[in-house]
Length: 277
Image (cartoon, rainbow, N blue to C red; front, side, top):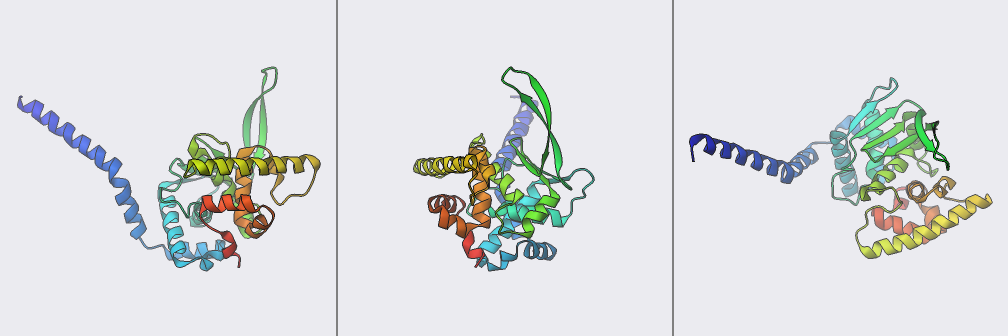
C-alpha cells in the first residue's frame, strides 16, 4: 500500500471516529455542559413572574424545569414574525410552559422541533380544501397557534400572554400546541402519544375513546362540559385540550373525569393540583 493510500485511509478513519463521537457522545457532553451552567437571574425573574406556582414546586422539580428551559432555548430557534422582536421575555415565557410537559422525561426536549415562530397577534393561515367532488379551493383561517409536523410551532404572542395571565381557566395555547408536538412523536397526530408499555396503550385507548365520544355527544346536544368542546373535533385536538385542562384545572378534572385524570397523570408524571394549593 502506497503512502497516499495510507493517508487516505487515515483521513477516512478520523472522519468516521469524528462522526461516531458526534452522534454517540457529543449530545451528552453538550447537554451536561448546559446543565452545569447557572440559570441566569433575569431568566429566573421572568420565570417567577410568569409561573407564580414555580416557587411551590419541590426543589428537584424546579432545578429540572430550569435545565429543560436552558436546553430548550439553546436548541430551538425563536423567530419573530410580522415585525415582532424576540426577547428573553418571549423565550422564557414560552419555553417554561412548553417544558412543563416534559418534567418526567429524560430525553431531549422536543427533539423533532426546530423553530418557534411568534406573531404579535392572530395570524392568517392559508388552507387548500378539497370538496367531495375533488375541487380544491383556498381558505384563509385566523389562528392563535398551530403545530406543524415539519418541526415548527407557530404562536400568537398576545394569546400566549393571555393564557399565562390566568393559569386556571383551562385555556393555554402553549400547552395546547406543544401537546400536539408530543402527539406527533409517533409520526402522526392521532391523540395517542408515545407511551411506555403495550398495556398503557390499551388503557389509554379505552379511556380516551370513551371520554372523546362523551364530549362529542355533549357538543352535539349543546351541553356544558369542563373540557373545551373544541376537543370534540378529533382525537388529536381532544388530547391537546385535555392537556390544557389537566394542567390548569386539575382538581375539577380529577373530580369529574377521574380515569382520564389518572391517564394524564401517568403520562406527564406530575400532579398539578399540588401547584395550586
